[in-house]
Each structure stands twice: as structure tokens, then as C-alpha cells.
Amino acid sequence: MLLSHMRSVKYEVKTTRTIPPLRDRHLLIKDVRFERVKVRIYQPKTSNNNQRRGILYFHGGVGRELFCFVGIPLGPFTRNGCTRTLSLLFRYRLAPEHPFPAQFEDCLTAAIHFLRTAQDHGVDPSRVVICGDSSGGTLTAAVAQALVNRRDLPKLRAQILIYPFLQCVDLHLPSYQQNARVPILLKERFIVLGLKYINKDFSIFEILKGRHVTEDQRLKYQKWVSPDYIPHEFKIRGYKPPPKYLPSKEMCEAAESMFDPVFSPLLAEDSVIAQLPETFLLTCEFDVLRDDGLLYKKRLEDHGIKVTWCHLQEGFHGAVFLGLFGSVLGFRSGAKGVEKIVNFLRLM
Image 1: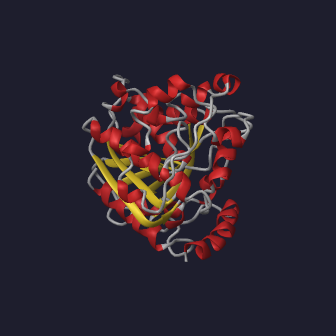
Image 2: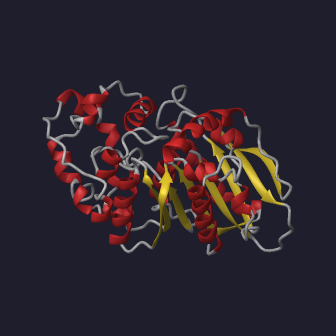
């Protein structure tokens, strides 16, 4: 059933590139700039004398796709009991015209701008939540980490991470094996897009062998990235420890930036993780990135960070993005994910 759904999804995702900004009779939608960054603001039409909560949304697309900004509807985050929410969608610069880490720099710049000016938009600065899906979830995690030591800014109220990519150390975790051929995010395709995003001309086969990881890095990060930390129930569909290959000195030197927490937030130091805000983390069973989320959940909880975890047992990568379109493109699992996110926002 999942694969039959996916055949239609491939077409539907492509067509969203041409969808104009979706109208919503409950919202005022306008495009502005925060310094150099283009932003779309979704503001409820209902009057509100009190300051609202604000949600900053970083779209996915591996830093290269724009369709999310063109057509993504954030209405569910400003309705359904969240009428006191101002939603903002950031249009960061895209690769390859703007190489990584331009995408992170834009998201951080826009987030800082909004935190400083939140009251001008009728938002309580202590109620700002950042959110992102897929690579947008990566950006969300990286921005949250970059802000932990900014004493000149209000603290984030929470972060919402929707099936994020979080590490490049082990691409053979159980979910990477189980879901390698499950659309939308095929394992090899995901790696190809990721390498293009950071402008690395590596052999995908050498990356899959893990030859970009030095022995020192492997030893350093195994305390955070290991199949041993994946609960048994997520290995039932199959897991086989991969063969070990010697690292390539040339690849390891060229891949150094891949281990920066801006690209791999799971690899941030404990001193950073310990200061992160309350977190909503969504994972999907049929997603290569599932185990990245499970490992980040463990790291956060190990440091006493409150985590609300939503696992979509029938979910796949992209389900929540499609769920934002309701019955137009949505699936049951995606609608459930959106509902869980909205319920979390109501508490902020």
C-alpha cells in the first residue's frame, strides 16, 4: 500500500513547484525581508490584544529546492486552536548558486532578526518556536545550537524537528538499511543530493563504505552514533552490521566540514546539547533518517532536555509536508503528524 501511494506522491511533489501561494480566508499572507532573507508571514485575521506565539519554519529540499516556499501552506499552524500564532516561512538562498553554509547563515540571520523584533510583529519574544522538516530540520537543529550562547537574545521556547538529517558518521544504521529503497527519500539519492548540497565530489560507493570517516572520528563519535543505541523494536525489520573498510586519507581531509555540527547537528558537544530548548521530534518508520532522530532524542534526554516524540508507524519521509496540504495531497500518517505538532504548539 505504501509503495502504491508513493507512485502518486512523486508526481504530486513535482507539481507543487508551480503552485502559487495558497490563499486562506483566515489569514493575511505577505512577503517581506529580514535583512537579506525573504520571508513569508502568515498572520491570523482575528484580532488579538495579547502577544502571540511565533513559529519560524525552515523548509526542506536539501538546500536546493524552492517548491516548499512557493506553495507550502502553514495555515494548520495558525488555525486549529492555534489562532494566536504568527507563522513565518523563510526563503533562504539555495545551492548550487549559493554554496553551503549560505542556507544556515540565512536561517540564523533571519531568526536573530525576528527574535530582536518579535514585539513589532505582535509576538511575545519568550514564545518563539523554530521548526523545520527534512533538511529544514537539520537547519532548525543547527540554528538552535548556534543560539544557545547568545545572551543578547531571548531564549527559544522550543524547537520542532521533523524527520531531520543529523549525522554523516554511520549511513548503515538500521533505518538506512531497512528503508534504502523506500520512496520518497531513496538512500543513494539522498546521499547524492547531500553531496551536491555541500559541493563534494565523492564517490557514493566510497561514502557508503564509510571511507570518509577517520578512525579517530569513529572512536570519538561512537558514544553518540551507534546501532547499539537504537531500541530493539526498530531492528526487527532487519539489521546487519556492515563490513569495515580502511579510511581514505584524501577523502577524510576533504570531508572534514561534514562533521561540523552545522551539517551534522548530532555531533555537537555536550555543552551545547545541554542548553537546547524543549524539543518536539517526529520520526517515520519508513524513512532512512528515522534513526538519526532516535539518536538525537537519546542525546537530548541524556542531558535532561524535555522531548515530545511522535513516531508515525505508517509514516514515510515527506508525509508531514504533504499533510500540510490537507486532503489535496495528504496521507493519514501526515495528517496525524500535523495534528501532533499543532497540539504541541498549543502548549507553548
